[in-house]
Length: 136
Image (cartoon, rainbow, N blue to C red; front, side, top):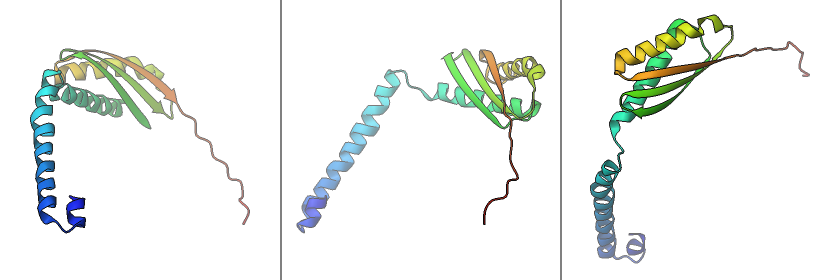
């Protein structure tokens, strides 16, 4: 398109643009969707993972106050998953961890129908600051 415009040939620019649109429609839209589908890429597993991640964070935040929640999910199929949760907290909540993993697992199974195994790791963070006077 640029060469056609640079030489002042609008017919070449229009033909180049039409070719670009044909490539976009045919190569991207028409052929890639069936290839991805036949390759097993589907939207449903991604929706399940996102829902599990959302449920996990909501359940954790309802039980204990965290600074950060990280959730990794291994979705084996539509009916089975492993969930690994990393929690960063300021106060120790190690006594609540068994209850927390059980509650997260129950909520995931109830809301998504996916049987699961939840593992959680709790990292306690300590924050310190100083009141040193800075030079002016």
